[in-house]
Image (tube, rainbow, N blue to C red; front, side, top):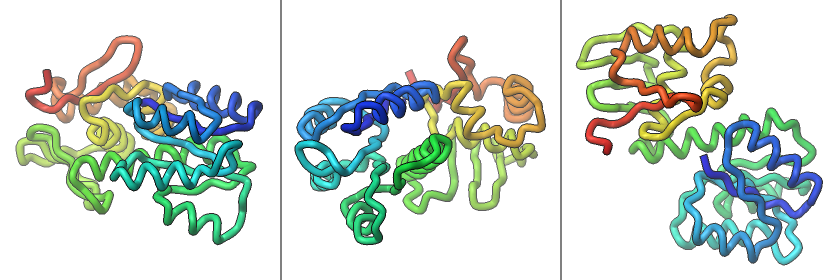
Length: 225
């Protein structure tokens, strides 16, 4: 997952870049509006975390420029400006979420995962962010929390469902072990990721989930080269 971090504060930027890197993101850390404009034009990022108060402008201007180009890159604002009007302005400019400094890193990661999930659902053809996910003959109905393969119901535990949901939301892209543990296993009752993945494969078919040795897992759509 390729992430753009725009934060001018040296100490905070270093800390955020390290935290995001530890969570499995590839981080490009930028400190100015000018640098952000160049990198966001050239690099296929998956999301942007952006401060508002930058030395050569305002983060809101960066967001407005992105949205004028019809760029739907998920954007999370982090700022010390804690007023209702600033929040309204940020959301109106195209931010997907808003986080006020100081904040716990756990909340930052949770909010980032949330905006990425919503973006993945939109990309899967679900503009409301809650609907039907499909890969081949495997389907996941998020509204009903049900799973079927070839029209047959597959009974999944809550953790198995969450793991499969994460893989299908990010089909054709590797999800690292760390990402899956954070997003899908907060209440795994002590069982390891490997145990849950083995049970999930047994239920939906071993052909659906591919192991990327030393990295994580992915689901590939049929016909993917």
